[in-house]
Image (cartoon, rainbow, N blue to C red; front, side, top):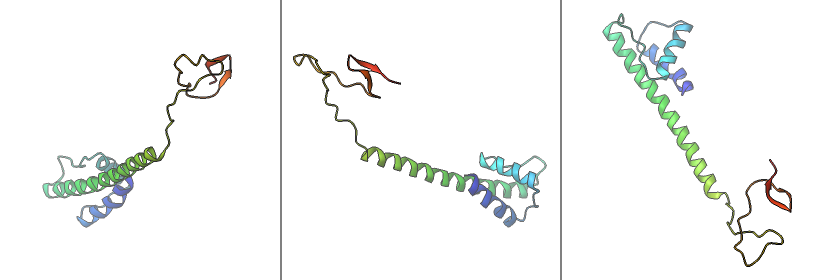
Length: 124
């Protein structure tokens, strides 16, 4: 979003024939615009305030548009990865020497066990 603001704000400022900003002023204006605030004081003339507000709105909206596009792409990529990854089959596994007449327990998730005599103790 900040890259879009950095590219659009100076061009819009210049196109509106507003006074040029020094580097520190431009940084402050970019910071305000990136959160959607029009950098207008009560000393700003009405016509200039209107132009600054319009530039701020257009720049902020363009930046948010790009941010939402990136967010949507990441969400779609995550959904696609979730669909193609294989999940465990969920079938119960019996530990060696268990009683086959008793219901089997699901194998513990995670790293391998320390020793067969301690099947529930997990190495971390």
